[in-house]
Image 1: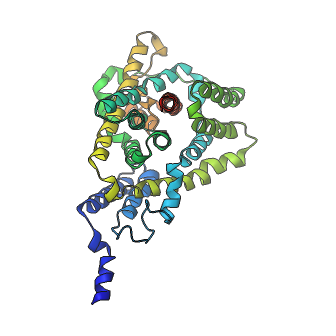
Image 2: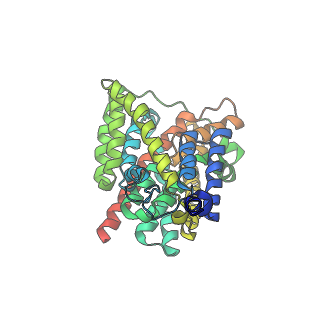
Length: 381
């Protein structure tokens, strides 16, 4: 009987708490949304399953080395890439190797929309400060508004590692829910007449422009924001591998095998970091709320700035304001949402390439914003 009792003490049934059940339910919801609704399955399936893995109850602090926060456990070693900001630059390498910046190069003024959408980051930074978070924590929370999971993780690993789990889950959750969150905001801020605006086709971009862009872009952006060098350096390096055409094998490795491996490790460990005994706190819930507000402000900022730009543009140079919503960093999902909404209004209106310009600009913009915040706050430490 003593042996049976000791065995029972080590089972999940003996150690389960309401928090574990709540988090397991959330993990199942993530998996359901990924499979049944096709919401970012490459993110939500690893994260959702990671939440299940991280919330299987066990007897803690007895040397089992199972939990993600226990020194010596396999999950703890894999989580090292999140805590130390190793995975995000590798993700950016893959993004750069699969991204075509032609739409942005053909119409550079659309870069302003990517910059305008970053208002969500700085607005939420101020809100988090007001609610009592430290400057470092507020900066890490604010970056969620860029809808850029790797950047959010990278900045949190530098400024607020104690919040990295909540910030990562919030950032990736809102990235996956772009098709749910953005359309109501876009519809609210635009009229039927604005949503059916057709933009002139983008001009053809030369090979030389495509090759020069990652080189010049890396130098300019990192001179402005050196703190973003690990992210932007890898982003533009990956893009040079793609556009140079002489490193095709390396580009294919970066945008397929490498990014897939890192996405699996990142998603699984980020999900597992939601261990109920550590993760489920009022502070985490507040981060989710602030993240949602940040993302909505960023979407609205991009749309409204596009409307402002239209005050100075005439005829076929006018912008469809919906593309401003793609200024967040959720590539290419936000651009797809805008294109889909345009198709519903007018099946002959193709906005995907136009929306990709602010979308990729948003990736660069959120990384630059993270570097600026890091440089400013690290200087104050």
